Length: 389
Image 1 (cartoon, rainbow, N blue to C red):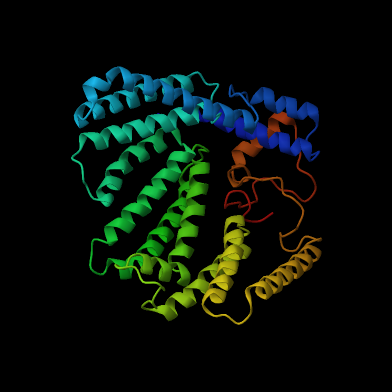
Image 2 (tube, one colour):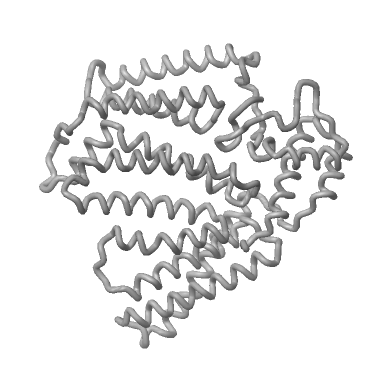
């Protein structure tokens, strides 16, 4: 059981893609109308600015309501952690109940109000649990206590903000827990790299075991975060500076680190692997992070090996990037093995990979694919840009 109707989510997804096809003149207005009638959904569609405004308004309203409650109960709860924790848990459960009622109406799906309600409920539940526990617990234990609550919220609501909080909690748990051991600081980069690689692999494999679109955004966010942390955790500059921050007393200049040669190699190797895999899989996430990682590698070399003045270094880098961009755009004017500079209008992998969905949509709208396009033959991934075109 989940908060949102998965059928409605799938229908919204189909209609959204049909609207994109209609803008590309692959569907006629009559066919688009047929798709909308065949796949109805009750979710309200507002602009992003309206959703942001509703999100902020809901947070302010919830904060004002809790402030009024705190004033009313201040004399009874002041200095009493048990009472404060009970109040927070009660407010959190009430917020969950109101959020479930809101989502059960069927009109709200990530429209700002429900996102803010989920966030408020989670914050009060976590705060209530911690207030009921003894004070002064180590950070890693606090994170370990938070994690089940966050994972439960993600499972039920599939919320993106809570997913980000859960990932931050996991990495904070690992970071704090490793520092409890004598060799923890030395092994920390490799543990973070291993955990990130495992997380990325799980996120990549998860869609193969479900046709649900419920967790698509959560999984895409997981891919982004795990790949970023994997590359950053073994970047020479990051490791060296972080090592200096953990030394007491803190040195004026970050000292050399152990295994420096290995970290220098990984600083360049990891982004190169990202870029190679991105080119092979046509994965946009890997391509973007591979390019950014190589830029970070060049910046890392410049940070510790000065061979040009900073201003001249920026001029050279800018000129090289402009030249690469010009050459790449000219080369990709024509389709080269699935790569082109023409916009793809965000073709999501789950949609193309679901043959039944495409067949159903084609049957309803009477749509026939354009020449050279075969439904179900693609293998997209990485948030909308991977596989065969």
